[in-house]
Image 1 (cartoon, protein in one colour):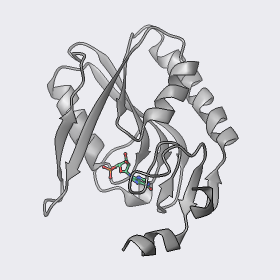
Image 2 (tube, helix red, strand yellow; image 1 turned 120 degrees about the horizontal axis):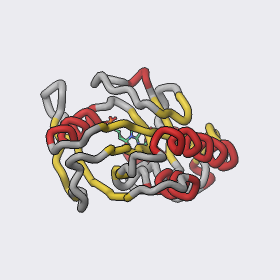
Image 3 (cartoon, rainbow, N blue to C red; image 1 turned 135 degrees about the vertical axis):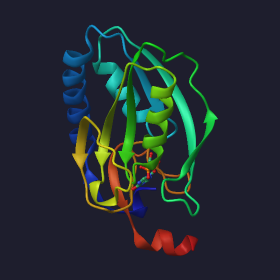
Image 4 (tube, rainbow, N blue to C red; image 1 turned 90 degrees about the vertical axis):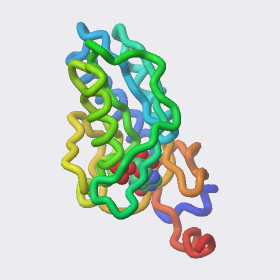
Length: 180
Ligand code: IMP
């Protein structure tokens, strides 16, 4: 697995320090809001665990699994594979994401949560790839801004592999070419 990585972009230590820092910020902003911390499966799982460990406030967690259908439409559409268990009506929702890329998935999820009566919907993402953005989405809390490269590790996959890497790295080109 490690031999497939061209370059480590963010080390385990850098990521751990950043998630603790983000949690400190969130603690101040959400201390009295009893938020729902919502993870989007499967990429956000490691980030969720790191955030939760450091976020010692009253909160509930939930998960959603959505898949995007971009097709020919420029806005794309989203299919809910697994919905939340909790109701978001009257709640403050904080979506935890591994990476914001085109922003199309998040745009649809935010629209849905607001439609269901969430009071506020904000996003916390470990990685932001602003150059790839199509939908007008801005996460309020961002770990690292990265260039438009395909990254794996810390929950992020290529063909469902590499999610368990504790760091974030750029895959060797040969790995893509093998699969083409
Ligand atoms: P988008 O912002 O709707 O385009 O989709 C974001 C999702 O695409 C993320 O939650 C990831 O699952 C996936 N994704 C985007 N960029 C990368 C990447 O560089 N590596 C792995 N997955 C990615």
